[in-house]
Length: 413
Image (cartoon, rainbow, N blue to C red; front, top):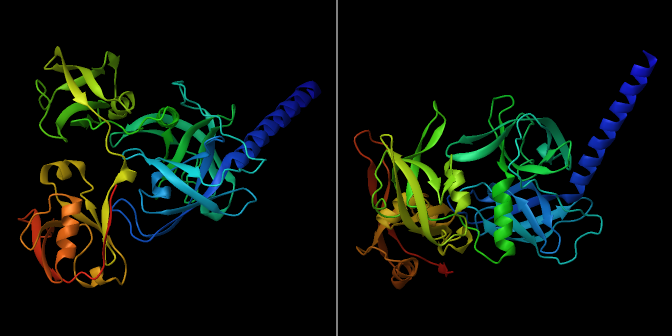
């Protein structure tokens, strides 16, 4: 009995020591992230956001965090390592689908005691492994919450690592760490409110793909894939063709077809498709089925335009850019009021955030530069805008806004 007790004590001390080492190492690659936005795109909100991130490349000074922490452009970003003051960083890539961003520390000299996170880029089975969500939950800097990975699942057409490790405000963008190996297996992203144990992290495979593309000087963007897919939650299938995004459906493909392979490789979710074709330009072979019969076809694709290369206009506190929704953007080609600064001249004009601009003095803008010329050409302009209707029988409501712009600036990429 004494030998058993001694052995148990040795095992507990050893496990405790391993856990302490893993968490100490996490504190050396984790950073605090502080982001401030004056004029936000529709995906973000103006104000200051606090979150976490972690160092993945000391030479290039790359830090991984969430897109909702970094913002999707037009943001001032600062990071700080443990024991150090905040310093400036730059967003060099923000993914339009994953809640993911890559930052670069502006200062070329990193603290000597920092370490680089080791990433699990494998396809290994993660269900049931013990993890810690590391970050700054509720302002408690450089701390962790423990749990296990429940499963890797597709939710709302995106793949997530589901865990019962609590992911609270301040954890966002931090590392989800395997407590046995110290490897990072996910990027903490979100938790469901008023639930226990329903928390989600971005898987590491797409993170590794993005970093590889950046290291090879390739644009890491996912493809401008022409189709979107419907999910059958009961059967856990997610690749039924449901419609088209960029133009008409490709030749030989129709709604209801099932996609099974891309370039001869099995795919099971929209994420699988996008990750296979990240940075890719050219012909893609698709294997599909229709009513049980298999067939093949091919399409041409190219990467999406990077989010950080969006051109935009600042007009008296209003940020105006392309429509944030790709289906509507391609179909209608309208420009959207993404946000209005509180108390600004634009807010006083009843211009309203999220409305689409149909015309300026009766003329439909053909490009962001054309819209800029229309807005700054005259002192008094008439805008016709469109928004979702509150009335039961109508999809849209239309409004006339008479406005005199005072300051109009074009930020063009």
